[in-house]
Length: 126
Image (cartoon, rainbow, N blue to C red):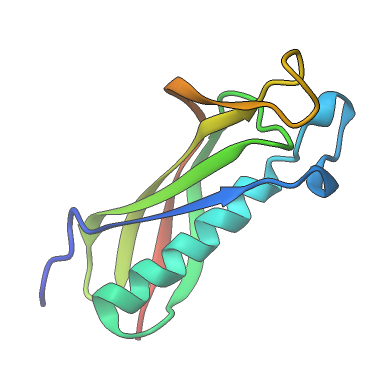
């Protein structure tokens, strides 16, 4: 069995205003979990040549709000390689944010990315 520990995949995405779900242009937490599923799929393809299946989350923490107009990065990193399972740590960070005080379409790159969501999960591959 080959260890894939340390292998990581990152996806970056702009969150359109059509995804705002709550007041203040907040986006629901499921948005980040959907991105975690996407990065886990690519991670499984890269490590095992198969899309794999997401089996479970053992921990999910919503640490900061995600808003429409944000650019976010979702990263998945293998932290344990089993025979058919992989334990994966996920992080969703906000790297750019809308800046409506400067204008309708103004935005800025954040000096320090904001960690919005973290999770640990298990994927299973054939």
